[in-house]
Image (cartoon, rainbow, N blue to C red; front, side, top):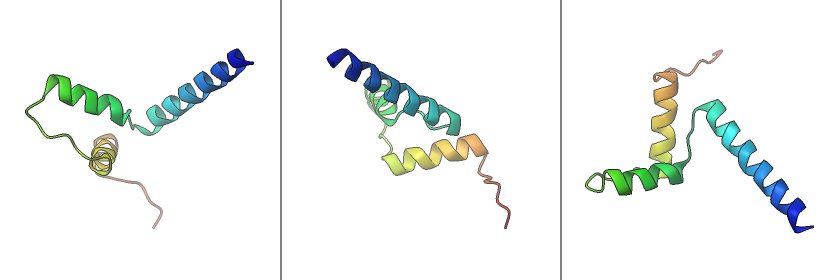
Length: 67
């Protein structure tokens, strides 16, 4: 039973990661860890700032809309 729960949890994590990669949003916790270990002198963006920055980087500030 526990093995099935672990398999489902792993599948969910991988699905979430794949979906984030499809829309261009890497993991915020990985970003925070990277900043704290590699750039401790620089401020860490909040999640909304991080999300906005990643979206702008992906779409170059342009979001396609019909209207």
